Structures are given as C-alpha cells and as structure tokens.
Picture: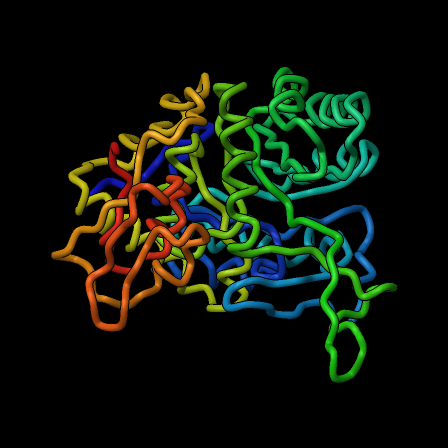
Length: 370
C-alpha cells in the first residue's frame, strides 16, 4: 500500500480526499458521516453572518455525475453553527484524528466577525470564499481576515475571477493556501415537457459542479500552483482515484469532493482514497508525494506547439476489437473499420487530431511518427 497521508499547513491528513463545502457537509452530523466514510480531513459548509435564503428546489442532477444548483452558503444561522454544529464536527474530527477546516464568506466585515469566533472555538484552519473579481477588493478582504486571526487561512477562488495566477500572486502575502474552484455559472436547464426550469431561482439559473468542470478546475490549480509555493486544494469534478492523481500532478496538495458525495453518499471519500492507493501501487509509487507536481514541472514553461503534421494514428491489431468507433468519429475519412474487421489508417488522410486515440475503449490507437 502506498502512503496517502499528507501534511498541509502543519496538519496531517490521513489521505488527500476531503469534503468540499456544500450540502454534503451542511451540518455537524453530515461532517461526522464524512469522517466515517473515509475522508482524510474534514471541512464544514460555508457560513456567513446571516443564514442564506436558499431557493427551492435548488439541486438537479444532469448527465451521469453532474449537478446544477442554486445552493448558497449555509441556510443555518451562524449561532446554530457555533452553539451546536461545530461541536459535533469538532468531536468527529477528534474521534477520527482528522483536521477540520471551517469555511466562511463573503465580504471583509463578515470575515472579520466570524474569523476570530472560529479561532476561539478551536478551529485551526479557515477557508474563505469571496465573490469579488476586483483585485483591490480581493486583497483588502484577504488582508482583513489575515489581521483578524492567527491561524492559517485558505482563499477559495472563483473560476470567474479572471487570471487566477495573477490573483494568487496578489493574495500570496496574506494567505497560507488556496482552493480552486467554486462551481461555475450561471447556467440554465429547461424541462421541455413542462417548459420550466427544474430550479427555483428567479430565472431558473444554476451553477454547474461535477465532472463537467474538472478540466476548468485542473487548469485553475495548475495556474495557481505555477505562481505560489503554498498548498493548493483542487476542487471540481473529483469522482474517482484517477482524478486525484490528475490534480496532484497539476500541483494540488489535497482534493475536495462535493458533488460525488451528494450523489453517492459519504462512503465515496474512502472509495476514492482506495482507488488512489491502487493506482499508485499499480504504477510503482510508494507515496502520493512522489506524483505531486509531475505535470506542473513538465509544463511550467509550456511546450513547443507543433502545427505541422508529423504524426499519424496507428492501430495495435492485438488490441483492436473491430468495434468501428474510431471510424465513426474520424472527421477526415482516415480510419476505416468495416464491420467485424480490424481498423486501418489512411496515413495520407490522417491529420493527427488525436480524437480516435481518446475514443478507443481498448487502447488500440496511438499517435506515432509518420
């Protein structure tokens, strides 16, 4: 078994899979269930100085593993968190020997009011979520919280904030770590039979989470990790162990899971951890730290962009199952796979786009030099 434990901001996480802020950790009881489900650390749903007025209905599944939601921060008033929910969460963290992160938002006044109360409560790490895209407001808000508490603080960044690398540079003097990203939106789904949105927001808008945002989240983690030595938590579309590997290779130190936990229950944290362990074992790694930043270091300064066609698709006939998928997706009439026959490539027609390689379910195609 590979070592999955990791030390982040002075705290030891049993494995790198933690909850991301959302309905999956919307109470102390749910946070305790995350611990029982195998999370390597804990995180509580974002609170603010007042309870959120959440539209109903506010969550809908689309595709296999994605959500559209109009969830905001916690619909529980902050006093309920301080009088009850955090006590349950802290007890669970101590029982399972897990770090606990509290999440707060959104403006400087909110953070300055809530941050010291969390520190007094015994919380040792704070994530703060901010909606601003204006650089001055971002830095002033982070500075306000930094001056209000002595414990480590983590800035959770929005995909709407523009150049996240630049934002990381601006916030770096004030924060101890970063989390990327929040959900993406607003977006829209329509029930065409009822001619209405499945969500209860004013215009039916919602925010996307789940695998659909993973490429955006990975790019965001990579951008931030290029600019800072501070830890980055990757959040967005983690559903399996291979996703954890991707985020670590991009530079993440932990990964957050929300949508997969909402749709599959708290046991998903341990399942993803087990899958991560199996991948590391299968690839000869003894410790998850060995894969951290592998892609980051390889691509930190970019790569040479090839515009001429110097490769072509090649078929491994021992792997091809004559399914014809490659022929169906080829837009250049370069792949031919008649029914129940091994695929073959017209190298003169192939433009090296790479789509067939990603579509083949049997790993029978690869790009090779012409």
